[in-house]
Amino acid sequence: QVHLVESGGGLVQPGGSLRLSCAASGFAFSSYAMNWYRQAPGKERELVAAISSADGSTNYADSVKGRFTISRDNAKNTVYLQMNSLKPEDAAVYYCNARRLRLGVLRDYWGQGTQVTVSS
Image (cartoon, rainbow, N blue to C red; front, side):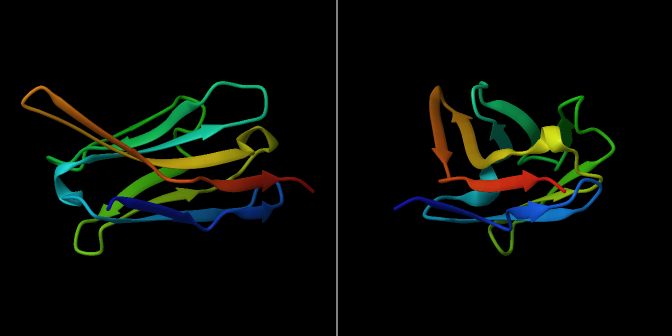
């Protein structure tokens, strides 16, 4: 059974940092691209950061470039999101996503989300 379990969310002051973790199980983690999405109240879910399975290349939303860093540890089946210089507009529920397209079959798994609140 597939599980993606996020942790590390919470309340932080503007300018502060948080590190989110997503522990994966039940699938071949190293062969999946891993993504962090977020969704704020009244807004659509948006892709924040992505890391490939092949070479670990990364991509970021323009709004978080230079502040957030995505990384993965295939030995631990875990993906991380280091968030620095947090802004109130970063507040959202953050979701971990695992995605793989192989031989025409898309596998797409989601975690339950972790709340990030940025407020003084």
